Length: 303
Image 1 (cartoon, helix red, strand yellow):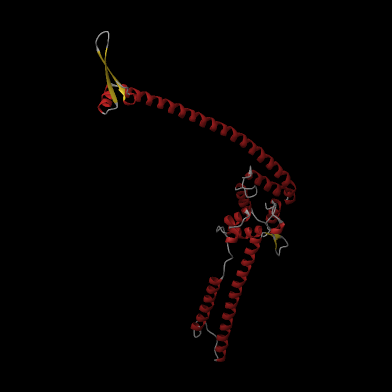
Image 2 (cartoon, rainbow, N blue to C red):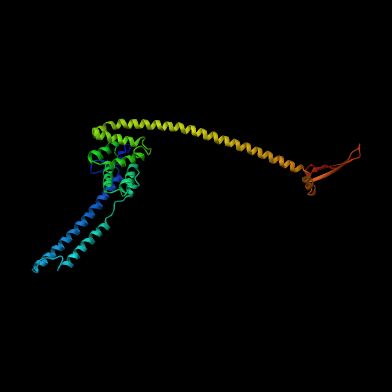
């Protein structure tokens, strides 16, 4: 996960790691925005406290006790309204860190965490998990699990989202990890039964097994695709031959029909009427019989 990233692309972050620049920019803008809001709230609280102190001292100077439910009720309510309005203004003025930095990230794992965890209305627990993981990206699978389980104590909520990420191929170049559910369950079993260190020890071996299974699966798919392609090509060739034979037969039938139509008595009479045929009369020298024959216009001969 992020292991092929050029180190020159990364930027320094206060946690001592080099992280993705868009993540660093988002986290810094988030910090700036949060601090501005906190300062506005503190100032509103301070102004309220000062106003209430002034009311109390004014009551003392008048020789009475400050009474927020009696004589000083309206002034007290005005102070509270001013504080609440300041709180509202601070919330409205707070500029939310640009989500587009993460949602349009060129790094698939950052984009996935943003879409599915940080900005998916999953609650503060999931959002805190997402921020913790983003702060260490790019990271290997082992580093993610160490941060989640050993350093942060993340519960099965993390397991659920990690399993979903594996299913979506976040850690395998967009190709779903074979047996991702069983791998996650096995990893949790080792962690619960033997400890986190054992997970880190066996994870590289498990990765090699999964890689071998994936490669074998892809090889089998490639072989199947070759067979399917051959069958598709054979079907297409046969269909082309059938269409060619049908077209040849249809053409022959049309020629026969045209020839029959041209030699029919009705066609000859029609040609004669329109000058397309010439009637030639000859007398037999032996019998004296008059013989008539029709010749197409293009075959006329001199009588």
